[in-house]
Image 1 (cartoon, one colour):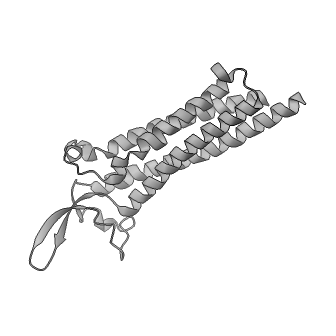
Image 2 (tube, one colour):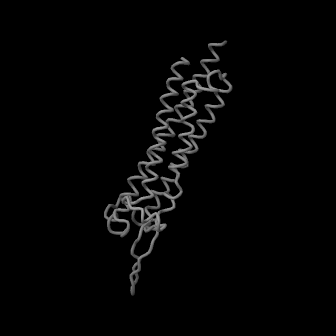
Image 3 (cartoon, one colour):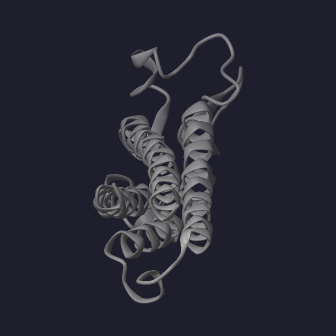
Length: 203
């Protein structure tokens, strides 16, 4: 049973590492709308992308936890002769770290999808028409831009296809962080089951 638990830890560690790298890569892409560095250099990137939760939350924090989980599975270093108490401590530490990073990424991505993209849009009045930078969909109470695709190409002027870029990548980041949370829950139960079986075998 312990061998099965360690094998599961190896698979979970590899899976979490992969999702962490994807999350970091997607967050980097959000900094370059339409693959153009000009917006980043001009400071015209939304706060959710600049926060970089996919880099340090769903990325670095989850990757660190995934490394710990993999080491537990392969029994390397200090994990080679660790007892049940130490194993449980490392399981809780790695689970908590990965869960925190994934939740931060999940909440940030959800907030980004709710507020919409940061872009250049037209503020029209009776006598004049001005261009401004901001979140045109944030205070749009009567229509939801996520469902009303007619707004996607008519509101944001720059970057072009800003809504498509924003929704595509933040939706992917949201799904990745949700997958990470699921993997963390599986890891916790797998670790608990492995330690429980270890104690039963010793008794």
